[in-house]
Structure formats: structure tokens, C-alpha cells
Length: 278
Image (cartoon, rainbow, N blue to C red; front, top):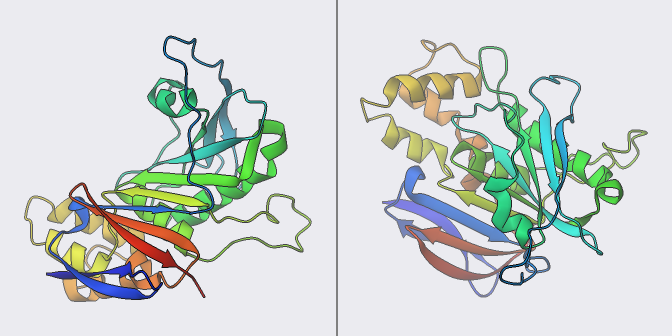
């Protein structure tokens, strides 16, 4: 059994017993003030003409990896935007084809989409590089809100698996904004207003311990976790490795924050109360 945090109707974080592990857990966190409400479309209407910004570099540290592609819907008012994280096993690469069709349900609903790639963890790139990159991408997007016709106050970040983990860590982690910076991007907040995380590892020590018992996953998963931490593959025992994963776990960093939370386990939503973050 595994304890997960949830928020009761009085706004207090409480524990709940849950038998699910990382691969079966889907967490959806939505800001009550936002909830990217789509615009209803007329059946049979022509799809909107999407403006595309392809392979835009948002970072200077690794410009070949720190790229995004934006699919911007025409709208008389600034549109909400979904930031889709491209990530699996904390590996990522810019999309080869700039194709808006996978995002058509969002675009048809009046929501712009930005697909974001991050640096892949490796022998030379470690945590928190993926989260830093996605946070910087959100700042970059906010800095271009006027030019791109998007609403900087309605930005959702979405990912699955490691992408969901990164989304949660960006959402619940520190704001990277530097208000006094001469850089207009650095002055922007890196916090999303809405987080959508599918099959995301939320309690890495507990969940990775369970997954490492699977002999079919041991080699690949061990290599990715060592790369994530920046340690040689033969440097740590299992207990030592999982012990270092606690600071990388959304479960262990989330406190009280002004968000309305809803946890979904095995497709069953659990409505909960309002949370506030210190």
C-alpha cells in the first residue's frame, strides 16, 4: 500500500492509502480561476487556420535541444495555451514534423498549443535540467504573449510519464522569475496555471523501488535513474539510489497552494477541496 496526498474540503493536505504505482497513476491539477474552457465549435465548420512557429529556440545553453513549436489559433481575444512536454524516460527531442493534427481537438476548441522539448538526461545532463528547460519555455512563451495572441494568465502544462513528472515539478517547484533582470524572458513567471499529468511518477522512492523489482525493466530504468541523478551506474546500491530520489518527487515537495486539485487513479476521479501553498 502507498500513501498519497490529497486535500480535504477544509483545505488540509491529508494522506490516503493507494495501491497504485507510477504507471497507473494519473494526476490532474487545475487552477479554479482558469480551467482552460474550450470554445464550442459549430459542427461542420471549417477548422481554424493555425499560425505555426516551427522549431523556435527558447534557450541558449543547448539550442539544438531547447526548442519549441507553437500552433496558434486565430482569436479576437488572447487564447489560452497548452504547453505539451515531449518527454519519455526523461529523454526528449524536438518534433521532426511540424504537424498540428495531433492537437486538433485543442485547436478546434480555441486553445493554442506549444510543443516543448527539453534536454535529455545523460552522462553530462542531469536533474533539474528538464524542469529548468520547461520552466524557461513557459517564461519564453509568456514574454511573447502579445505577439502570439495568447493569454499569459491561462497557461496549462501537460505531459505523460516523465513528461507528467516534469510538469508537476515545474508547477509545484520554485518560480524561476527574476523581477529585476534586464532579460524580459527571465522576468516572467515560470508557473503554469494548470497542470495535466498522465501516468506520472509522483513518489519516486516508493514507485521506483517497486519497478526495479521487475527484471525486464531493471537495466533501462536503472540507467535512466542514474543519469537523472548524475551518478555512474555502478556507484550506488538500490537503497542509496532510491533514497536520493525523494527531492525529485512531487509527492514530497507539494505543500499548500491556491489550486483546486483532482486526483485520478485508474480513471476514477477523486474530487477534493481547495489547496493553498505557503
